[in-house]
Length: 216
Ligand SMILES: [Zn+2]
Image (cartoon, rainbow, N blue to C red; front, side, top):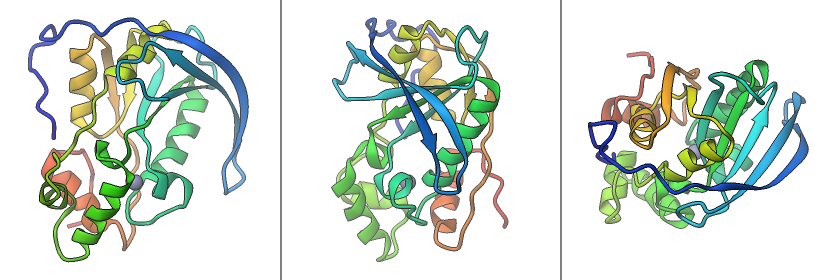
């Protein structure tokens, strides 16, 4: 877990980013559910990565839109890996945001920021008995290297300064607040439990105080 400064004014606000392209994409998920998305690209993002924002439902002018920062997970988002809950989380988030109006921020920070290959290396270590955080540390990485500066910049470019945050992760709320985003409400996501991801979810709940209601 990254250490977030405690005072809301502890960090200077991030540099301004700007909208570069806006394009409409009809989304259709494997279960057939569909919704249109306004996809935004940006210039000036702090880390230079190709993050995108998906405007869903009645997103324009919403007073405190529902926002989910979703970190890329190739294995879960694209291939439906059951080792984590990213695929079902993404599917749930897109629908819930589309229903109320808001943004899904798709952040290119695979494997809690360590990258795809390192994440797969960590999986191999987990198969030898380490939990998801111990595996990262065994690879010389931090538990969570994600940084939400670009997320805050994207919201600024979209003209959004207050959000209802769709997340169970307290670190996201803390980092965004420090970066100048007002979190008016924290909205929990569902728990997508399976035989394959129960160990992973339990580690998340115990280690980083994710608000997950898991069976004992
Ligand atoms: Zn995942």
